Image (cartoon, rainbow, N blue to C red; front, side, top):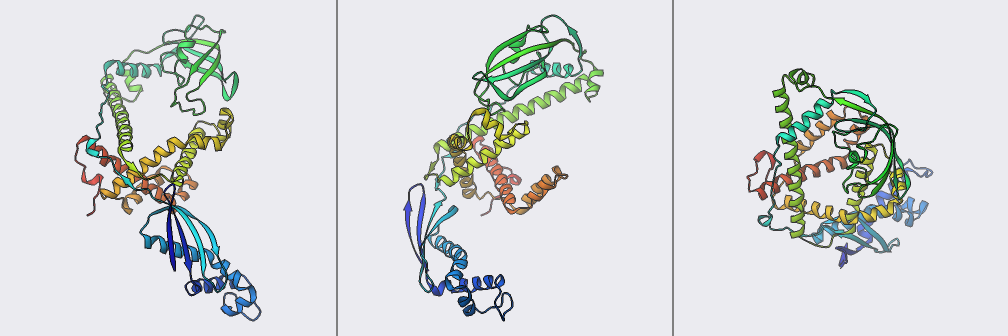
Length: 438
């Protein structure tokens, strides 16, 4: 076998591979056996027909066609190994010459794993600032806990203070009703943040039977992706207003909430708020750290196959997120008046950023010998099996090799983030969190 290579745009490489008849003969003989297993030949048992007889029965060209895929698989792999290249995705194969008894020639175009020159980690500077939990934060949560046990009394006057409203509402985009954007008997607690920012302020002061129309800007990161970043028209009709009488903060109330005393309840709430504040700070730190790493890292051109893979992941993540909130992808696309192709194109910028982050994670793991071992993957799978013990479909998926590979990548990314975080913070990695091999 011989081959030539040529560099192409978009970090791709073209192989021209030539395979002689002597080199592909073994594949012809195996292909002949496969054909004989499904072809009746008089005087011979299935799978036991001699090669020369099969040539006469079905023709040598048909045998060569049967053998083509394993020939290409073997020789393409040999060419890649000989060139010491790391490819990604499936190659695009075009036959140049194929005839029995002659050299087989094909062209293979494949993307290369981009080379990455990592940013100087010592120059990455990120502040890790955890929000201080103040008494007002604690009191706000305590008031919410009291609200869970409030006594509600119907009132005729305007909604105010900690009152509750029961209302119907409809949402519109450009004056067109949003599919699934209607709610009947929706409960609004003025003392609690509404899932639509600004909603409470608009309905405060309304009385039973009153109607109001207004528009609100949905946040860019709103969980309803089809509404995120949009100005949404809203029409409400108030049906009832309730005055809410909050119970006294007492040990009896604490016991109802599963704690021995008010002091224990406060300790628990403060601990939870502090843990949440740390989680948010950690997330912000990691995002800023990765942004700086991406900005300072040098990349070869990113092949479309990597960007497309990230776009596909983003699509499935969106679909799963919508389904969790009872919205189908078809309904979502109809609401935003787009098709899948348009959506995929809009994903491109974010998908490229995600691809760069993945390449950085991979390179950090390579350069710093960060590995995930089989026992770690097995342990993670056991945790998932326990979580989804009654979901047979999910348990079956966990047995697939590609799912195991995905879990391994996820675990490695986690280790890389721990390593990077420790480096940027100037901490020393704990041995059990990151294993190095010389």
